[in-house]
Image 1 (tube, rainbow, N blue to C red):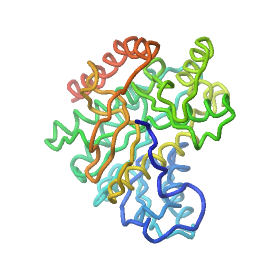
Image 2 (spheres, helix red, strand yellow; image 1 turned 90 degrees about the vertical axis):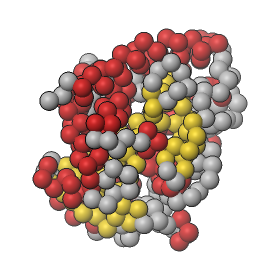
Image 3 (spheres, rainbow, N blue to C red; image 1 turned 60 degrees about the vertical axis):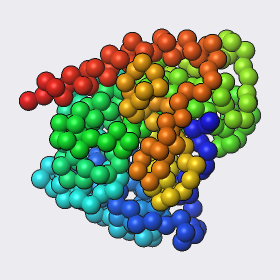
Amino acid sequence: MFCRVVRPAASVLGRAFSVSSQSNAKVAVLGASGGIGQPLSLLLKNSPLVSDLSLYDIAHTPGVAADLSHIETRAKVTGYLGAEQLPDALKGSELVVIPAGVPRKPGMTRDDLFNTNATIVAVLTEVCAQTCPEAMICIISNPVNSTIPITSEVFKKLGVYNPNKIFGVTTLDVVRANTFIGELKGLDPARVSVPVVGGHAGKTIIPLISQCNPKVEFPQDQLEALTGRIQEAGTEVVKAKAGAGSATLSMAYAGARFVFSLLDAMNGKEGVVECAFVRSEETESPYFSTPLLLGKNGIEKNLGLGKLSAFEEKLVAEAMSELKGSIKKGEDFVKNRK
């Protein structure tokens, strides 16, 4: 059981695609003018899996759309600007990806983002629930441990909740784990596959290095240091950018990878597995990231945690309190929202 059984058909680079890997999906990006939204939209425009790319934001979207529309791929790009155009942006969408929100700055935790981003996600997903209730919803906006419960509660309120179609995109944690292990072991990171479970903040990020493919082993001190680096990798980027933003390019890559996997599965490709933060009964936490077998209707099967090492069992136990608190915070936000 691994987080990457197959590579997405839509390579994020290169022009030569077979016709068989094409589809006619309409994908909407909400927050398309931002630091994640622009490179994510570029990667989606480059994919044969996307025929209609709908870009929405509160500023600059017509320019972003005009720029991307000149790229020699078949996806039709349309820009939408401001709240009054959001329903049109979403109409007919089969997959919606939401990177909207404010980025983390030095000294900020993902929780510090909560008040601003919680409102943004609630407003956007409310229109999604009203306009394209059957679409796959992929949330990038942090804090994911709270924004996924917010999305679920919004969809419940409007009577269109389907837990198999709402995903918190945690793929960047998997991408980082693969990269860091590849570097340490002299392996091609593209050939490394590590499930990362739990949540998407600090100690709730739990790389299952014992389940890495190919198998790798580390002394305990190195294992703890590697786990800590994977958990705090976002802070590493925030500090390196020195106030100029957070992880945008790597997040755009990871977001595109998840979208391509989901589109592949929606097109009938079998054996597509990715980790994501979803409604779950695998642990005592009501939401939890685990490897998921994806299918035409979203989650086909939750593949669970698999066999954990003693170290990993301890990490899961230690994450529970923080995870449950973040989840409750998201649920309470919707309950108390006017």
